[in-house]
Length: 385
Image 1 (tube, rainbow, N blue to C red):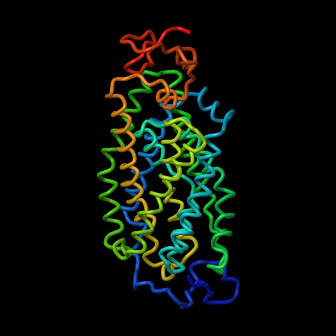
Image 2 (cartoon, rainbow, N blue to C red):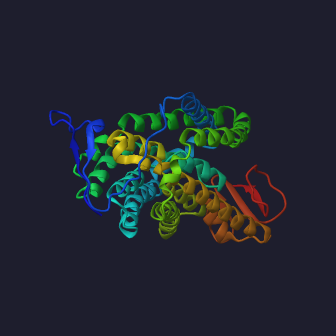
Image 3 (cartoon, rainbow, N blue to C red):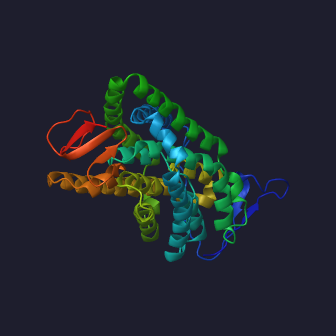
């Protein structure tokens, strides 16, 4: 990969102003002629899409917060093994994967930079939805998203500096959108906190809100996709090159796979493995788009501004594939109709003394058909401890 340089049109105090940057031709850099649609980002459809996304995100995060419990949130901070593994996966695996794929596919410098920026971003809200769909640990999922977003304030500039050194002569680490990161953190924590409060005070309403949130998400997907297509138009087709398609397909898949493998290596239960898997493979593409817009003039970045959209297409498809795999495997185990203490302990993170399974204040005896507690698998009798 060749080094890309940026020179200002006027040498007086303009080097750090992206709109004045001009690309200097170098080897392996070949961007197609590209112009953004007229008034891109300021049209009525752009504002409509942003408004729908904000409303849907708030509703979904409130509904996800309704699945959380204060005691389990505290447990993730007092015993942060899962959180630490997730952070290592997020800021260790993903940036390294992005860098390695850039080398593997011999991406042009500007292409490699776009991929690296995406790899250095924290996890997004999509990972929380996938965790819920795959029956993961929602308390761990939200805590991980909050922690990775908070750590992005320091780790994103550091990683961008380290990985782009030698590729780019500008100061990409200074283009990190700190305001956007803080807004993303607030948009996660406040709605979730409201959901947690409702779950503590009105658990029956909380269960209804969880279902309502998922229904809103499904129904809103149609207008969101339609408006996205209208806004972007055929521009995204210009980046459908084999190299970028391969990179976009492999990057989330490697994240999902290595996140699960690493959490299994450290003996986390099945719920935590699924959660860390989803958190690692999902990137906050909104932050990636913001950095690309801030750091590069349109004539420099060209159609690669749409790379985050290409990435999220594969992220969605592969995430749904993993959800189907996890749920199918779980349903297959349940249909066998046999009680397996080892697999149950692994699934729910409880303890087994050789005779009984202990879940908090409850004890699960050998297979039966009735329960004295609300929480029970199909094959267990749960007795008072």
